Image (cartoon, rainbow, N blue to C red):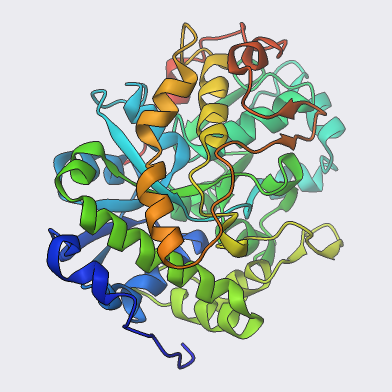
Length: 407
């Protein structure tokens, strides 16, 4: 990492007296993914120390394992899927319903849907061609995502549905941990996958198929990973939680400050203790430089972002509510929950505001609006109506095999 100065003046108020962290040594879980970068930087480059914290990073083998360790208390907090936190909150994730907390957003964008070499060789390189193949008798396809209620499942389902492919009836869905995607592809167990980087880029680099869609093409600047924990941890350690938010906010701001910082961060996270992947698979898409394996290359207009002046890190109520509408759409929820009430319980808005204000980082509105690739407009104002607006939302009950978890 490049040298940088960390002023300790403002931090003193947060590490002494009544604001001192209740717990100073934390076990922080993460998955081997590019978008864990801000957590890794905070733990290793002095940002956590500034707030009186020591972060022990613990890489996890699967999202299910990370979930279990969060619930057992073995992990204090974690780089987490948005949908994992809300799946646990609502009792949908294969674990007992538990009150959870989202401390902040960690990134926007940066996930991809890839197809296998066999499909690419057969000329299945567009959504239309994939829909034709998916609807052929005897040609049932299998797609992998990373967790039953996770973001990758929701991006995959949303994109397939936008192409006229019912993700629970026309194809099979299986759960595969991110670092195992390429092995499953090579073994021809799956026909495609949705996952975070660098695994999509590495598949293209190794000529193991093509990138058919990026998640930001589904929803530009979409919510992705969050800093998650149990609500009990926040209630028992509010000063620690605030200090942790501040440390990772500073790390996020540092990464997005310059291309030099992004390059040094990519180099750091490529190491064997972190993402453990070639820099050549991490750095280009980290910088927004894409090539899809089909001869197309571009500089993405909505690249992986960690801060963007605080726009990334706000725990928006509308982002949380959107994931619950998709749980409703796909039958994971049988009835409409109290969308706004649950989001207000989970999203730790007051702690985030305190942390961001202390760092002179702008705090956006609690709700934000977006238009997704199918033209639907989302602003969080009518979640029940939004969920009912999808033609497929009542066509529920995926096969049990689609919801098995790989540990």
